[in-house]
Image (cartoon, rainbow, N blue to C red; front, side, top):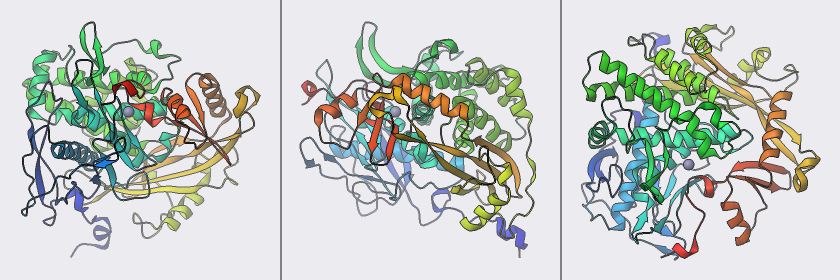
Length: 556
Ligand SMILES: [Zn+2]
């Protein structure tokens, strides 16, 4: 018999995290990177069983093309649950490819976080549209609960199906995963939050690509012994940028080395995301080089470096504030999460990562980074409810209410209303049997009126979210408090940012069927959604990941 405490801590292993015998893996084939560079599919395993579609626990492929109003025949499993080897031109192969890449990204994030995820919308499955229509684009749409992959004709005449490009499928899934963890991050009152969405998309693409042995060996060959060179893993969405003078262009190259100051004033989320992703890429390179110096062969050096950076990046998600996260919030979250996930850090990875992040300008300076590294968990809060760590939402609220003076509630914490937005327990990899952390997210809205300089938006109200994220260990020790109170400085920063994008990077939209308005919106990265109650500034999903706006002349 285990003690009551042990029973309380034993976590009912989540089906999707465990070797539950009811869950049978299914082997599928995917193009590991790009149909041109790596046309030969490789086998991967995903959690099954799968229904025709395919449809699984988290994802449902529905091959509907809105432009021609047609549903393509769905991939269907055989009696034993396996799928036929469809030809690469067969849309059913595309369906399975998109499903498998997205599904593996979900599994990777759930495994690292140590918890099952619910999506950032009110439904259990994310819909995947592998041939949504014709344009040079692909995006995650929270409103329609979907990942939409489009097809277009390239300059050389070939049809480019974005559902076949590993980077693109993984990137869009990364958006959906971040939205599942932090719902407010699709709001855009802070440019670095919009850029963080892109960064998580690109980093998901990097980790997903490096999960394939074939890609790793190509990568090591092309990037060279120091990993300094351009390579297909760090080039996100090869080909998508069209043809340039130097050949085909990718959308983004994480090996690029612009100085941090070059990002001042950049508001386009993809461009700004490179400030963070290039720093994380440098962290990966440094860990690889340290492992090589320590005597590892290139494969092993890469394996350990990738695993460490992947763990830091994914675990950071649970350490982020509820809204308006900055790159610094993320960098701190990476280091803090890792200091508990990997306390020994025998190879000194954390300090190498901290140096790379500081050099990339996403941590203030190496000394600030060192302070982040050295903090340990604070003592447990007093008055933990007897059921700790298994709280009801009411108990969670009562606990926070009793500590409201410690929370990020702004100037009058005694009077501030707040809600418990999130309550999650994580279990520790790799066996996921005991509770590792309890994560409580609390928040409150502050309405701010847009002043006269906002033209047609003046007099309308936006919502700025305040609150914080508390990460406790299973005994109630406080590991991290990501504080995000609404302060005068934050309101000022938001208004300055919004004023800087009005008329240039922001399109005002009312709910409309006007195509011209939608087309105009599609070119700009931010939307001001005007409703009866106020205006919400959001990133524009249709402009989010595409290289170009919808181009009718490229229709098939
Ligand atoms: Zn994106």
